[in-house]
Length: 281
Ligand SMILES: NC(=O)c1ccc[n+]([C@@H]2O[C@H](COP(=O)([O-])OP(=O)(O)OC[C@H]3O[C@@H](n4cnc5c(N)ncnc54)[C@H](OP(=O)(O)O)[C@@H]3O)[C@@H](O)[C@H]2O)c1
Image (cartoon, rainbow, N blue to C red; front, top):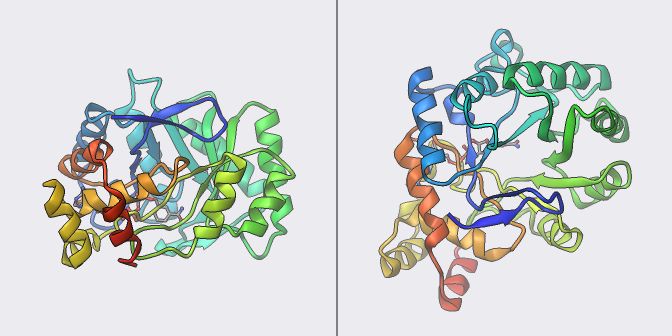
């Protein structure tokens, strides 16, 4: 797999990462199957795993995904784990909690769950409207100073929030939703390019349970047939060629899915292919 720089961090990763959420939420596989999926990702050249403390079924099992990753990565210290804090799961709901004291607790719990001394990339999951954005980001700056976090990332943000946060602490990455059908974060992507910040598009295959439907899109199917690849691989190759700061993180609960996604790294789309897929949204 080809490599890309994780923004300005000096860290280089396989250009396709893996989203680990499907291993821990509703419909999840057994733990041993989840570990096998992560191992399949490593065999395919994936070196960046995306997770969050909230990837679990509900409050009592916060950190589920991080603990499975830690087990899978024993003996693989060089794999980059990007986690997130700032969301909670009361009775299975997704809610924000960006209070600085809660973010500190969350980060410390993630360090224990991941069995690491420092978190390479710690992302603020989603702005909590009940807490001033600068207060939540200020706490992340503190954690970075203390060495608990190496790099700070943001998720689900606007250009204005990116500017505000970047003035408080250097931002290494942004994780917003983007795929062939969802271009709502194009302005954020452009600003990331200008600032040399990595962009990790989430739901790059249109989200859990919807990746299969990508095959129903005529334009994606045409491009895929031309290259002898799947429409999902074409969708990931489109993202990779859209921007040099792009590092897609397709989710997977099964090894075959992430192995196939990793194959998008060896696809080169023509200008005509890119024009067609630019029109597919
Ligand atoms: N920051 C946020 O707010 C946020 C929100 C959502 C997601 N995320 C992150 O982004 C990651 C990816 O997003 P997502 O999981 O929502 O959606 P996604 O990546 O668009 O789709 C994931 C689904 O696609 C299937 N799949 C993966 N590769 C495939 C391939 N090559 N061919 C056919 N099917 C394939 C998988 O099936 P199987 O399960 O059968 O393997 C998986 O369930 C998540 O895992 C999570 O880490 C972040």
